[in-house]
Amino acid sequence: MTAQTAETVHDAPLASPAPSGRTRSGAVRIDGIDALRGLVIVLMVLDHVRDFFHATAFTADPMALDSGDPALFMTRWVTHLCAPTFVFLAGVSVWLQKANGKTPGDLSRFLLTRGLWLIVLEFTLIGIGFNFGWWLFAQVIWAIGFGMVVLAALHRTPRWLVLALGVAIIVAHPVLNLISPSTFGPLEPVWRMLAARGPMPTEAGLLLVAYPAIQWTGILLLGYGLGGFLTDAVGLRRRRVMLVAAGFLALFAIGRGFNLAIFDPVPWTTQESPLWSAFSFISVNKYPPSPAYVLLMLGLAFVLLLLLDRVRGAALRSLLAFGRTPLFTYLLHVWLAHGLAVLVGVAVGVPPSAFLQTITDPSRLIEAGWGFGLGGVYVAWAVVLLVLYPLSRWFEALKSRRRDWWLGYL
Image (cartoon, rainbow, N blue to C red; front, side, top):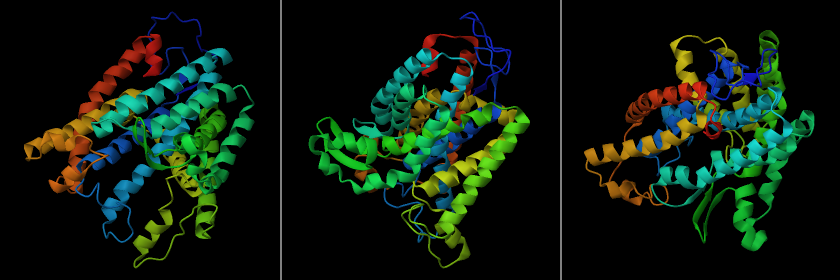
């Protein structure tokens, strides 16, 4: 991510390499933001590897409060940080492009075309990579793409207005759940994609909406609206981020503590042990994202940003490789994780055909007894990251050397 500086170079030759620590346009990078995005990508890979490798991925809720498995609960819970941070930072990225001098017309064209490109990828390469078969899977990339199309028009309005709209959507979107999708007749699939989570058959195949676009667009608009805090000088930026983090977490604690329905539809309850009571308290609704979920996860993301802003060395370089190539890495990890599952499955006697239509019809994998415990999941996670890292590092270097237009779409 970048911040406006006096040294920004807007007329650099198209083939000019980026100086160290700067973007191709000459603006200074904020490593903490790139590192935060890299961290959530690392956690996202864990979540999807668990989907492909864990023994109960298709038969049990990993966050069930009666599972008796704290490690499984936390493995899934910590990955709840990924989607809202990913979407929020997409909004921040748009603001920083504007702050770095991209003209309104150029920014509108870029957001419209890139948003539509993300939607195409979601319903082709990404969806097929998850399922190894055709279906329509509307998840986080779809939501970001839709949000970018919305911002293609809204970025011309005052930033405070975009921020207010984002907050309004986050607070008020539960009202959308009161509207039955069947009310819209033949347009029911469209309404589901915009506001109602769930599966349904369509003429083009099964449609599964995991991320209704309107709700997640609110988080993207919030990122754009708060992006100005991240263009300040380092000391002021850190103080403001600390205040926002404290505010978000305090609001979460108050609303969740009193079990206010407007914060989350599922109240927390006292469990048999303090640990599981705490798990109940932090188990907030992601589908769709409740205000409590947004406050908790983004509050934690801001805390992580403060910590990552001070990280240096090999750890930072690793996170930056992923964080500066988010779409490239996202596309690769889906196919790598699913492909690795097929290879391991064949090695232990599971027929490759069982891994086709993995999500729409997991019955063959269940019957074959496929899957490993959490230890096996973490080993597979490490393998996928080890394969991903040099590829992401290579693409990061390529983007720093060249300014081909298509690189902005990957």
